[in-house]
Each structure stands twice: as structure tokens, then as C-alpha cells.
Length: 191
Image (cartoon, rainbow, N blue to C red; front, side, top):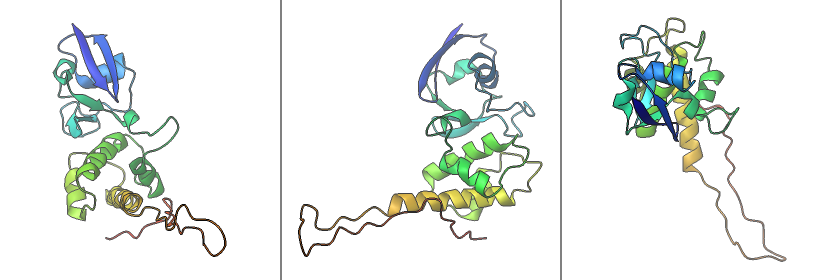
């Protein structure tokens, strides 16, 4: 049957068997290979995607069930081709990934958390990623990555340039003072 899906902001269509999972449709029909097939029982979280902003296991959903929802895969988080989102960059900066198999699901789960909670506690981060199994890192650096990303997002949204005396020029007037944010400056990690 014909299935119309909205994936990463674009309308996509495909002829699919009604029993085809969303994971298989994403990988085979739409060539979005960021969601990984792990256990295929909904336990490991390697196949995590966002459905209307909420993390779901794409191996447990039929593609036809996703009709009418906004689907976001790891490929959809990048602000532009070849660029990383804040959370993706934070995982790189803190070495929150090793083999990378669980990483897309972890990042999407963390992204969903940071959309709802701007300053998550360690417990909230652990809860948000609890449905994603990592066999390499021990989770410490993953939690650190989410804290690091939260700090960067908080700084980029709180401080804005302040312009004083715009429209005036000439002797005796100083240039407006601006507060410049350094998005790449390390933030303190609370453990």
C-alpha cells in the first residue's frame, strides 16, 4: 500500500507492505541508515527515532502507523549538511561514544529531553536515556555529554547582545557594548 510519511521535515512516499516496520522502511525505502537494528524487540534503543518529538522504538511500529506524525531521525538533527547539532557535537567533545551503534538513539533521546527540560538533573538524564543500551561506554561520558549540551544550549539562549545608544554617532559616543557568547567554551560539568 502507498504510505505518505513526513520525515525530517520532508514529505516522503513509498509503496510498502502493511507489515513493514518503520525501522525497515527508513533504512530500506528512504535510505536513512542512522536508526540501527539491534535487538528488534524494543529493548536496546538502537532504532530510536522521534515521533512528534517523543522517542519511540522504530522496530516496534509499522510504517503505516506513522502516517500523520512528524518523524525525526538522527539525520534530521543536523542544522546543515556536514554540520553537527549541539548535542551531536557534545557527544564528540566529551567522548560520549565509542563504537557508535547506540549513539543515534542516545542522541535522539537526549535531544527530546533537552526540548522539554533546559537544565536537566543527572537523574533526569539517566531516566531519559534509560531505554538505550550502551555496551561500550559505561554511560558516564554519555551523561556528561547531555550535561555539556544543556549548558551550551542554556548559554546560547540566555545571553543576547545588548545595544546601547543605537542611532547615535560622532564624538563622545562609544560603540555599543556587546556580550559575545563563546559556544565552544567548555562548561563546568556537575557530577
